Image 1 (cartoon, rainbow, N blue to C red):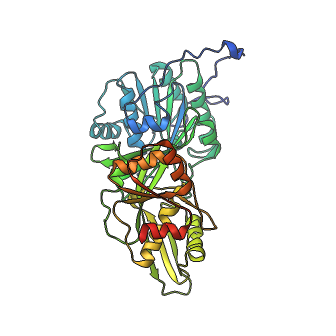
Image 2 (image 1 turned 30 degrees about the vertical axis):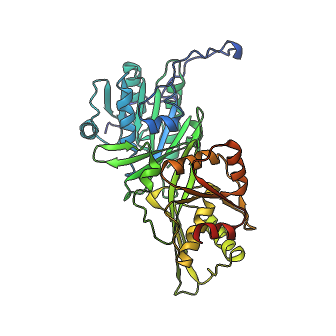
Length: 422
């Protein structure tokens, strides 16, 4: 690692900002360079169609989840068309080369720089004029004129501000920065870091699961509802174009406490398996555990099942999870969670060819969900012959015309459990 004394000794700006003039908005040209399509379908989907030139993208995630592997994969694709500067503050150039060889990232236009001094990095950017700069990671970068240590709030904020000025300069490169995540699940450093960048991508996934989910929590150039799904292999991250089939591949056909939910992430319909286990508790206070679904939402559904459907769950431990390590946040998964819990409690299995979707209200009513046609079409594509859904959504589905599947509309939670479990 270079000495911290090698940069400028004074002044607040490590990167000089070019003078700008005010321009009438009617004279601002939109004939800029088009998005850079990376060719990694899942990343292009989450970014909104590709990488915007001059944008600042933050990739966050837990240690070991694959952030550096994803960043190097993006650098490899951009290097097919232009020059890329990959700045590593955590590895030597040789270590980066070892990882690149495993990923088959072998392009002479991919330049590697092992450096943490932002002034020297800025000089290299000025000299090489890359189309993309990757900073791995922002917590290792520092400005010599600041007294605080690398990774501190001040250093992270000022280094990100300098990188932002570089990206937004006329003809500036796109910048991808990698950020570590704290135990609380937030990007290490100030929250202002997320406000400064154009796009925030979170890389999610359990270390012991083979699947990873790339989710946009902020995107100035696209939707924040899209997700990308990857499988971790010996050669890095492999995009999964059909995640529904992957998440249902190991589903047991006749296991009580399992239900297939027609979820929706952005424009992508997903069929996922929701599992529940209900067992008598040996303790005075029953346990409730949720993985992949909102814990408070599970508690709400248990109260509705006890009050509106007559399930006596007060003396039972309840465990709910989404198979495959995926996380589902939308209310349309409510009915699937409720059916899985009821199935485990009654020891009855859901029919293997049945999928469910619907939001459950506090009164036990089943509320309509959006884009029901896309959800039902995905279920039909994977061989499901029957979908239990809100009656209001059924009317919308019938109004659209052709249905490839047997759709059953329900109004109340008791009616839904009868349709799913018998």
